[in-house]
Image 1 (cartoon, rainbow, N blue to C red):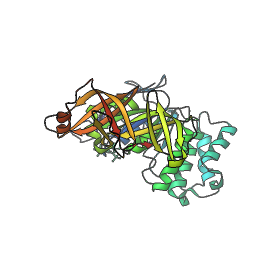
Image 2 (tube, helix red, strand yellow):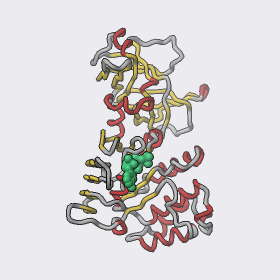
Image 3 (cartoon, rainbow, N blue to C red):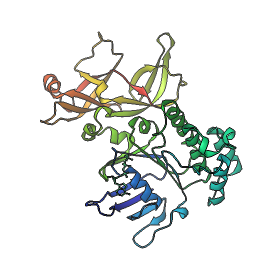
Image 4 (spheres, rainbow, N blue to C red):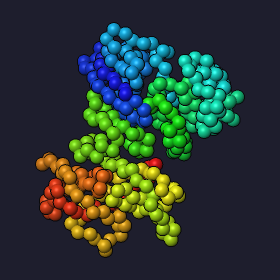
Length: 357
Ligand SMILES: Nc1ncnc2c1ncn2[C@@H]1O[C@H](COP(=O)(O)OP(=O)(O)OP(=O)(O)O)[C@@H](O)[C@H]1O
């Protein structure tokens, strides 16, 4: 478990920049998500001991900070990857890796070192000066450097933010590959929901230095009361399995207990575990199944909860399809017109769904 109660006020500020209690799993990827200025980087700096703050921080049973003690950063056995400039620019790539290995409390084995360099395609970069690497290369080396020290906690602060689309996808894929190899918990700061829906197991929503919500990714994303904060990005992720393909139309079917969707075939093997993201704005509701529509994905669902307010023209509805939750957004007028209520069985028309992993 990661437990961190942090209070931080910058000198001269009228209010605390951070006042929060984090409870995160001791392994897997936890994403810290929030708008600019929410305090995401400040929080990572506090966890790393790079920012003076009042805190109780325990990482998998080891106290890093409490009311009477504060372990210095170099003893916290953590690794940090920033948006840019995580490397020592006056050294070569090899020099950066050697530097990290020498200072590590328990560096990785030679076999794991070679494996990490291979996965991250760092081998051919070893003689290159760090200062002359491209953005994507720099982040691959920064990740290698972070992982060879075998940290007890890995902090990633918007590692993709400075990259263009191609490099972003490349690093995301590498992180996805590495996630099963990394034993340490990973805290991933981002303000891009598409990154976290792919990588995260756990989600913390931060606003103005306060935790708005925290919990398993699926649970937090299915909360109707948070949907308005996420705007057009509101929507759920569903864990499913590739169950069939239709080569004629280049479609692939994914299933979960008693739900299924057809998606564009992206080549995953039958039986593979996948993660599907469905945005609330892409789901509409009908009282009976409409077959005369171009929408392929029509799911029988049950209405679990309706969140509407008198001031808002839009309502958010939580539906269940077996074990999976789906959010739909409709106008309050449609809600009234169709007489929708919690407990009703209806049909969800899913206009679009994306495979995120
Ligand atoms: N050194 C500092 N001195 C004073 N105020 C600071 C300092 N660093 C950050 N702040 C303030 O603390 C708040 C949180 O900043 P922080 O950089 O942690 O947010 P963030 O969520 O990481 O934002 P972004 O996504 O833009 O990087 C902001 O209001 C910011 O202006």
